[in-house]
Image (tube, rainbow, N blue to C red; front, side, top):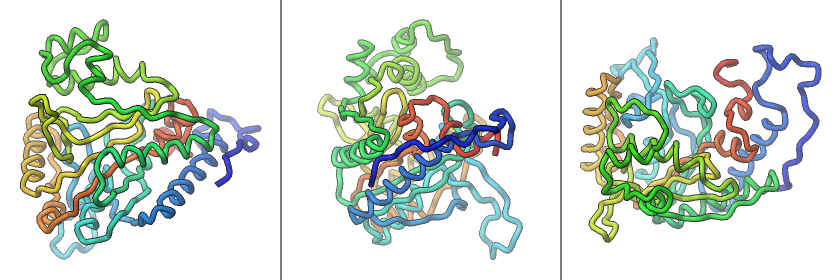
Length: 341
């Protein structure tokens, strides 16, 4: 693929403040098209199959930190639920395909998250998610970095990959051990960042340190993969012992500068354990008086039937474009952001 080159602008003569006009420039939208094409060519060359899965589901994401949209279907359902949940990721459906024997696969499409609107967030955005059979976490990190570097090359940018454990990141940058520090120590490490502590958990304090103290200092032209998260942040990842007596989640997050691009797991295969995690999520949601989406029984059945060992990752395409164009505003990479939709 040839390198992306900026073309003529399209805003000459337009009132950029008019609500009907696009929030992104023509150059940004052309770059989006090139990156989408690059991703498809990248996976085609590697024999990874593109698939499409439902946007509306009978079940929703139980993660307490993610809010889902839902809607009511008015037509014939033949006994199926009328309430449908807009996907926050294609993960559950892709895993059902993996259990059915589809092999390595990916999906590039829109996903939806309620309550997420602002400078870096839009309620609907584009996610690229893929799964590799028989792979571990480090091999997937290398592939994700290779894809990001290929995209960066379109904008004549380069970034080296560095891998660091979650524990060492906090130790080296903040002088605290995230696995053993008290909540008071975590609060003190925030320095002059003023946060209302009401209702915050230990993981909330760790997340605040990541977003307010660590991410802003990440090197602009470095791809940083953070691995081995605390077990309490396992989501849908496997757990293992880190050798120092701490259980860690086999997951990674990939950053380019201060922008989080991707979240990947060495995938959990145990249906019973996944059911326990779903139930735990529901308990947290009920304690907060949040909606509790129905558990995805189809995913649990697929795990019970036997999903092959694999690693998977979800990459935010809008975030990637923001990083490529070095803008903190997601509106600048969307044809029409939430305020103009």
